[in-house]
Length: 93
Image (cartoon, rainbow, N blue to C red; front, side, top):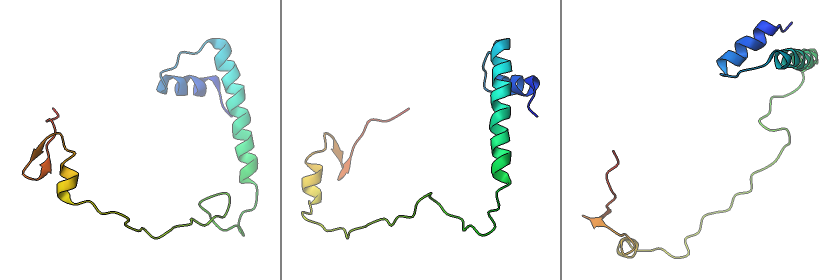
């Protein structure tokens, strides 16, 4: 059973300021949510296989094909700053 103290504790952890009306409202709402969770816990899932997604799907992959391979010289020609064959970027402090 969820109490107003529980809601106050969660609100404090979340750094929320709640009015007395909101505390009462959220106490009832959180209690209702937990009742639904308890109802789901009563369902027999012993014959249900664990799954990563709610629906089965197959990821369709294609082979990577290189259509045009750029040389290092071509790639470096786009660099605003280059040093010893590498991109030079500003130091980050």
